[in-house]
Length: 53
Image (spheres, rainbow, N blue to C red):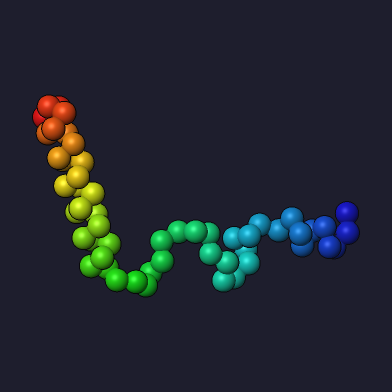
């Protein structure tokens, strides 16, 4: 095994600055809350329309 093979197989988490696809820290929080509550209301309407509650 050469030194190049070892660097290629290094885990991506060990490289600083690499994002893993998780949520970002920046952005409008109010939009996230509004969209979340909208989803809750839509699910609640479906549940009541189907008679599950």
